[in-house]
Length: 254
Ligand SMILES: Nc1ncnc2c1ncn2[C@@H]1O[C@H](COP(=O)(O)OP(=O)(O)O)[C@@H](O)[C@H]1O
Ligand SMILES: [Mg+2]
View: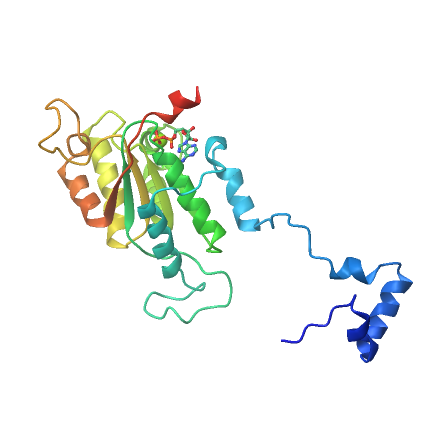
């Protein structure tokens, strides 16, 4: 590629177009050096990321993915994104426009309180948005979802469940933290069963280990006890489990 710099008199001497441009700049009092100078290095705002930021809780607005398995998941989901109205059978068809995330496996981020599970999850949502993918996402804790579905005078619970089940990317935070009941188990099963059959990517976090292992204290609760076998079976089919460990970051911050 041949570059002609506006501030290079030799390069512009034989070029009528460049000479005209120089004259116009001079008329407006703009020096050619100013035009040729590199742009100031201010970060370019990404509108989709800025829009997503507003919905992200304050604590996680700067969250970055730190775990390699989560970074790999972000890449896979971004690679699976297709143009609007394209199907997974015809991924190269569809309308022109921003690619939208479609399908992919899910992640179960588990580990002790304060290890950074919610931080990683929001980091992943931010990374997908920054990668230029159209991401329709929603986040709820499992307890808030059960609460919203139980609320009297609120939305029809069946409508709410259908709506949340269809969200292209869902963050279901703190699974297993709510008091277990048959009703909670049924809701969780129906939600995850729907999403697993359609391969809708879901980020699930839990303070509990998925299953009991030999080296665990006998009284230590595990996710299987809290959510039941049917839910655990769906989770193991649809998720890659990522263990996040370490001291509680909230205490460190305090
Ligand atoms: N990698 C990180 N860098 C900076 N702050 C972090 C990081 N991971 C977590 N935090 C902060 O530590 C606190 C606890 O993290 P959080 O993700 O809420 O933990 P968990 O969901 O595992 O209980 C939050 O205030 C969060 O913003
Ligand atoms: Mg959390």
